[in-house]
Length: 127
Image 1 (cartoon, rainbow, N blue to C red):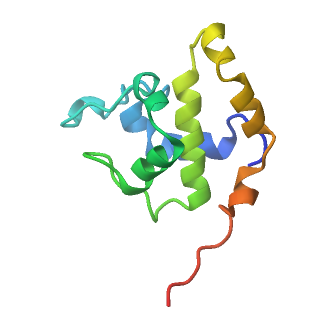
Image 2 (image 1 turned 120 degrees about the horizontal axis):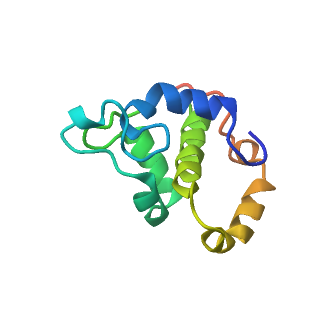
C-alpha cells in the first residue's frame, strides 16, 4: 500500500481476524469480547501509548487471549493491521487532537512503506 487511508485488504483482514473480539470500531466490544477472560482493549485508550514496533509485536506474537498471527499473516498484512489499529484509535478525535499529528501523518503518507521496508517481499527460506 502506498499513501494513506484504509483500504479493502485492511478492512477484510481486520474483519476476519480482529473484529470478533476488538469490535468493528476497535472499542473492545466485539461479539466474542464478553466470552474472553480479559476484555479486549479500547484502541482509543491504549494505542497512543505504544510504538509501532510494540503493536507489530503484539499482533505477530499475541498476548493473553489474543492469538499470535505470525506466520498466518504476511509481514505486509501485520503492517496493515498496525495501520488499521492506528486508524481506529483516531476515529472520533477532535480537530485539536489531530493537529498535533499533522506533520507525522503527512510524512508517513508520502513514503511507500511496504516498498521501503520490503514488507511485500516473499519470506526467505530457512536453511
